[in-house]
Length: 341
Image (cartoon, rainbow, N blue to C red):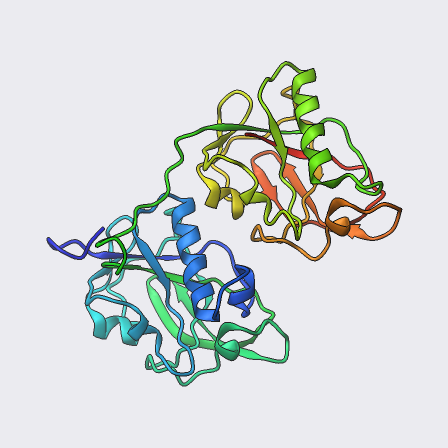
């Protein structure tokens, strides 16, 4: 949505919180503020919100408002007026409508700003959003109903706070706004009914073969991959050859695209085992962080030859999916989450 013809630029408050090291949440980001922008873009893409998005956070040298292009107005996702112009945005003077999250639901609470009450960049910012320790500090703002504060309280940088994400009126790439990635190649997901230990040198190749064998045994057809994160193979969300959507065996959409898969932002479909069954909570090997990155616990890249070590575990409970539950010893027997190629 462009800021012409009287239409406003949109705002949303992320539904999930992040520690102050915003660079580390998305591996490979050259600076903390780029990581913050990337998180906003991933959240928008996961909900198929067209446009380019940035996080409303200040750094030591740049106030948040100066990172946001355009003169407004800024609106909620449903078009309700939030800030009528740039002066209102700088001071946090809302026009009276409630903010929503990226799902379009009413949202509030604390979020990182690094910004003073008057909109300046004079507040602590978790070392420019590169520190997630309890020693470093970052300024957090808050939203309560239609009331905004850029400087509600100072939190330690290991706190998980939300991000305020702001749509940009243009991007200096390809001559205009980059559209949201919309999946056009649906692929199925299932979790194996069989549980197996990672110790013994499973490896990504063997995990993929097991997923395919289980699918063949149940006449599902196709070739399948295990959704495992590892240092050599990268994040689990990058393993599918398709951009999605990713569905249940009977076609119900679980993740609308790869970004939704990366952030575990489900659309309501419930993943079953290869027989179409559900049974409480499924626990599976993941090796992932909460935000879909490669975690530090992955049973030596799923090549653990002997007992010992631990691996990150994910869970499926109805429509809810988490990539990072309590890690388990590598000789524990857990399932695999499999995706169709």
